[in-house]
Length: 342
Image (cartoon, rainbow, N blue to C red):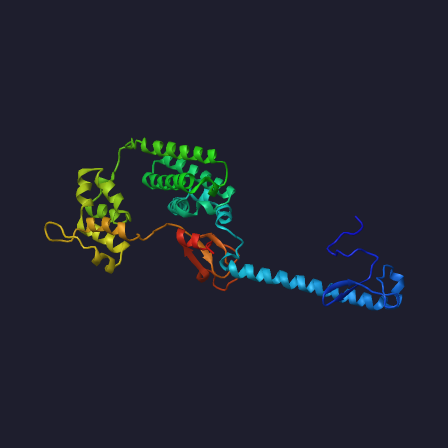
């Protein structure tokens, strides 16, 4: 190849930049194009200067175009200056596999997986979708081993299975990355996990010692008030007759309603019992069908407003702000997903 580069003009010819673009230099005496550089040696200095200026102009124009594209990109991805461009990349780079081993972060990761399964699964790349399934498998294996948070994972698997059925059958297989047979196999795996969770038999501990029912009633009520899900109260009441009486306490359900819902929401869903009193338990289950509950997590992801860096709460990063703690904002799972919506 005689010439390598972005310049499409061949060497050995004289070209002049005009308003209409580059044109070959025309010899005024002969009226023809000049092909030899020696034919216009008297204009060599002028041509070199013209070529030098034009090259500087082209370089400056390319630099301005590149800066313009970069500025548009930064404006479009303003909250993503921490280096994550998409939800899939953030999902891959944040260590969720280790986070599920921490009891404070487990519910947060499970809720995030559920939100992704509902509406964001198709926005993940192929690697991110594979990572999603790997993390889900680790979550299921952890629950099968320690026999905790069973209902939470059942709901997650049911949400994912419903979404996959819709994507595979109704919307079409083109929205999922990978072979359709691979996703069918994954759906069969989800059904197998659900069957395993349904077959779990929780055995009573073998050790003999102080149990929950041996505590004073005031302590039992105090512990039950720490439960933020009404379904946990119902399950606890089914464990023993004495606990069933405590789980029906009106004050317990009243505090639960006031914790999750505003006074205005409660006034719109008033239910009276046969005795003419407010039935707070029925009101709670009616309210959760109409309004979202307040989410509560032991540990969350946080975003530094100064550095725009995502990290787990309690994880230090080299922040240059004078008061780094005031720059950190806790993110709910939905807030985390909203960061990547453009």
